[in-house]
Amino acid sequence: QVQLMESGGGSVQAGGSLTLSCSASGYTDSWEYMGWFRQAPGKEREGVATRYDGDGTTVYSEAVKGRFTISQDNAKNTVYLQMNSLKPEDTAMYYCAAGPYEGVHLYGRLVSYGYTDWGQGTQVTVSS
Image 1: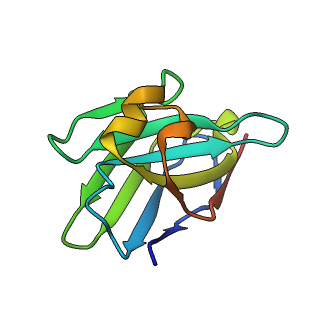
Image 2: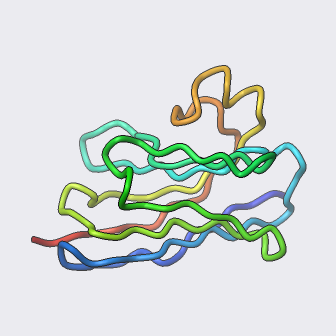
Image 3: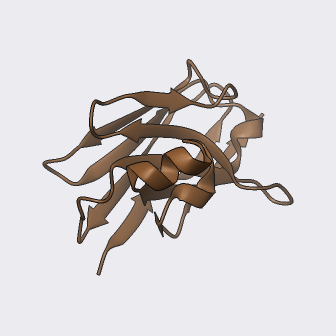
């Protein structure tokens, strides 16, 4: 059974940093894209960062570009999201997701519909 599990969330003051981790078990070759999404109360889930394992290409949303970095350690089956210069508007539940190349590109790399497997989420709270 494939499973994604996030960790590393917490509370931090504005300007601080956090690193989220996503541990994958039962990894499958179909997970060509790994992504991070977030959802704040009353808002839709939005794509934050994604990485294509084929060539390491990364894509970020405009809201986090220059502040967040997605990386992947295949030896550990783990994906990371380094978050710097955090802002109160970054407060949300953060989800790790995995998906195949075709599905992700059909809908868009920062769109949730193409991702087939999801973690349970980890909460990030940024106070001003």
